[in-house]
Structures are given as structure tokens and as C-alpha cells.
Amino acid sequence: MFTDLAHTALRTHDLERCLAFYTQLGLVESFRLNHADGSLMLVYLHIGGDRFLEIFPGGSSDLTPSAPEGNFMHLCLRSSDLHTDVQRLEAAGIAIDSGPSVGLDGNLQAWIRDPDGNALELMQLNEDSPQRRVARGEAAFNV
Image (cartoon, rainbow, N blue to C red; front, side, top):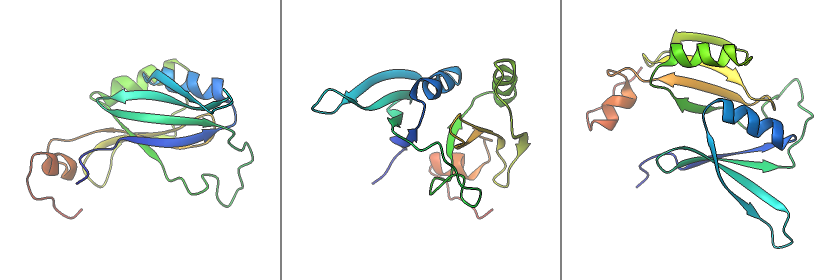
């Protein structure tokens, strides 16, 4: 049985720029894994609990207009105070693409992009949201 998101993996063409971006979001580098030859395989960033973001070097900087995200849809990071987080990010020079606004599931959300163009949803869960209902063991409802 799945109980939580363990990690999401992304590739980057500029590792240092990418790590600096996620550090501004409050994620902390936890450890790195190397190939047998000693070259970097990936960097683990801690989100919270046992949830991580894996960053792999070697990503492409060429994004096509028809599919700028490739097969990646988005990564969602949960916030306890989205308005404050958005203000902090704006003060750090990070562009907010949209929000904060209430999504179809009743949660407050804002959208940004990382340096490689990956979409990030920032979400503050509403206590009545389907996510919270499921977490409490209640029946979810269709939205």
C-alpha cells in the first residue's frame, strides 16, 4: 500500500543554479550519490519527513514550444502559509506565474517554475479538501 510521496526526480542542465533555487524554497541538500567512477549520479534534497526531491545532472536546456515540460507535469510542494511563502519567494526574486488562488479542490495554490522550466504547484490544504478528508480516513468526494 502506498502511504505518501517518497520523492520526485528531475534532471537539470545547471546543477548549481537548480540547487540554489530549491534552497530558496526551503529544501535542504541531504546527500549525494555517485557512480562507481566517482562522478555525481544525483543529489537528494529533503522536503520533510521521508519525502525527497532527486536532482540528476545532465538534463537538456533545449525545451520545445510544443512540449516545454516533456513528460513531466508538475511537482507539488505543500505550504502551511501560502501567502507568506509567496511573499518570501517574490522578495527573493522568484517570479510567481499565478496565484495564490483557490483551485478546484478547494485548496489555495500558486504556480512557479524552476530554472529548468519545470512547473511547481505550491499548495495550502483546506481542512475540507479531498486530500485532508482522505488523510483523516473520511470518504473523498468528486470535485
